[in-house]
Amino acid sequence: MSNIYGVDIGTSNFKMCNKEKGTILNEKNIIAIANKTELLAFGDEAYEMYEKAPENIEVTYPVKFGVIADIENMQTLLLSFFNKINEDKKAGGNTDFYIAVPTDITEVEKRAFYELVADSKIKAKNIYIVDKPVADAIGAGLDVTKSKGIMVVNIGAQTTEISVLSLGGIVISKSIKIGGDRLDENIISTVRKEYNLIIGNKTAEGLKKDLGSAVKSDEKFAPGFGRNVLSGLPVSVQISSDVIFSAITDPLHQIMDAVKMILERTPPELAADIIKDGIYVSGGTSNISNIEGFIKQETNLNVNVVENPSESVVRGLINVMNKPEFEKIAYVPEDKNYD
Ligand SMILES: Nc1ncnc2c1ncn2[C@@H]1O[C@H](COP(=O)(O)OP(=O)(O)OP(=O)(O)O)[C@@H](O)[C@H]1O
Ligand SMILES: [Mg+2]
Image (tube, rainbow, N blue to C red; front, side, top):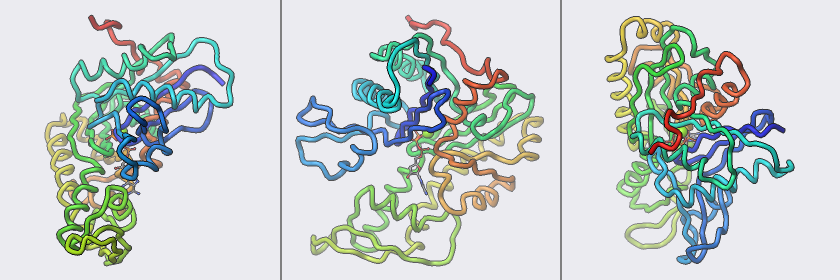
């Protein structure tokens, strides 16, 4: 196995790949710390403890709205995931890293991604940055190096990044702080209002996956487990997909408003290409039912939802590492030390 790795450090999920190893590590980007200092669990195992842990155990997400908020815990997670992906391999040799970094953030926030890896115990020799929307488009199977306009909309957990690309670079990119988590929050408040039922984040996410649809569809039901507001007792209530639809429709429309704004700002020749090829949609939240029809209805454009959309960015990194035509896509920050 080679010593070249790629990472897409998401708000909800941490994705890592190795140049030669075919599989992708995709786990919850979450850490469980006991008694303030002991690493108890990380990734999916820590997520099991989320909202269930006693007071001495802190279960937290170190990335907020797509940027690193808690460097120390993110360092621990990076190293833990790195060791996990290398479980079956002897350590040694020079290690290179490709990091997918969001575009519409400050220079200081971008620097934090680079320094996370640079300051890690992994001691990487070469560290390259790849603009996240570019990696995303490559992961969708597109040749971004041509003089052709490509629109990518990545709907993640706490951000939606909308970008127009051409010639391997970014023409416009805008990130808004709305993603799947906002849908979950709205489900929690709507279920409380409609059913007097208090539910947790995991239940809300489960209802979103089971019953959520971006366009109104036939009513169906699923059980929601929670606590009744009035009696205070735990109960199970049959939740209607109509209620879930009414909870999630506003944030989905807000995402569409941002997409339309970017389309309005897209130079006409690139817009012509987007009309021909359609919009590419990725990110875990694009798994929601009928997203394709919804975006089509809102924009009058064709829509391609990328396969396995949560992993599109990291799949793109694998291609950047392996394909000579993408050699120039990865770059080293101009001033490595940024000081
Ligand atoms: N089947 C599904 N239906 C609806 N939403 C889903 C589904 N599967 C995953 N999601 C949502 O996708 C989101 C995670 O997507 P993704 O892994 O792209 O986010 P991230 O990269 O961690 O976040 P960000 O890009 O905002 O930093 C979560 O909000 C999750 O609830
Ligand atoms: Mg993401």
